Image 1 (spheres, helix red, strand yellow):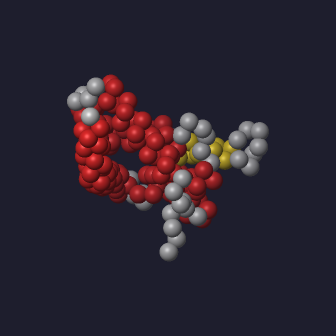
Image 2 (cartoon, helix red, strand yellow; image 1 turned 120 degrees about the vertical axis):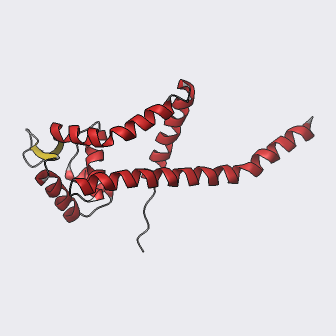
Image 3 (cartoon, helix red, strand yellow; image 1 turned 120 degrees about the horizontal axis):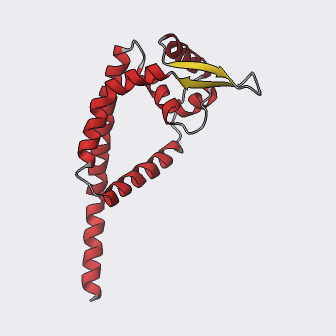
Length: 163
């Protein structure tokens, strides 16, 4: 009996590197497709792709976003964040709002009309995700969401090497 279990364990271990490779390939493909769509939106709005990433940070955050939060999340300098926020404000996507208790604190808010423009552009992406989602059970989707959440947590802790 121990021989059979050992063989099964060996088979699982032997397939792990190829599973990891295939996962990496699919994650790179997903990143490439999302990057292509984001670049298209950025170009159409006269923005830089980093500006679209900043919009996503503001949209997805459960807490108010400050320029300091953007700097940390996007790995930008303070000057680059200021330029990014200036572009987004001029383009009508974000607005700066002063914190009422401490006037030095600035929160960044997504302008509702700009959200509608983004929703219209990214609609086909949402529709594709919804079509694919229909091919999976709720339990499978829960695993996918848990995996992506855990991966994002781990990746957020990885320091980008400066060369």
